[in-house]
Image 1: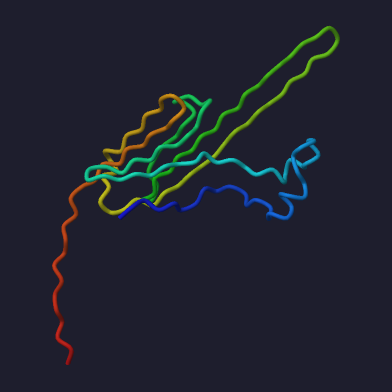
Image 2: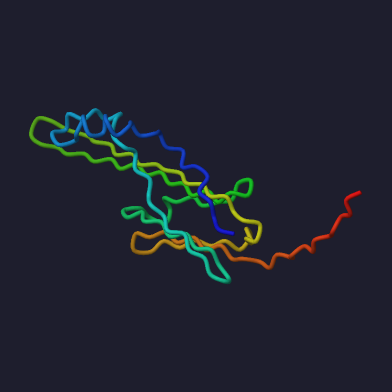
Length: 144
């Protein structure tokens, strides 16, 4: 079994017609039409582990919240950056707020209490150890 993406709770993007019609070339593209970015993930599996590697540069360990909710692995992040510039007679403040959430169904052979996460060089890696799953023997039932 492998991990299955459940939902990423982002707004749907506008269809391709609008994406191509309202280009972002000269910043006339309205902000609500811009595609909301969600970090891409690579999911791999070997005999002992599932691994999720998420590209999320510019964040820190403290920006991530990784947990298990109702047999789903949930990865969330929120970051607000405030920038202030002052010049002779004016002040300008700019806010940048970034947030995303990704959720993945976990197969039954994952040990949720042993899940670990590391963040290094802009990559969040979540390791999900596997457990042995008892293969249930099938029982033939006589059809009468």
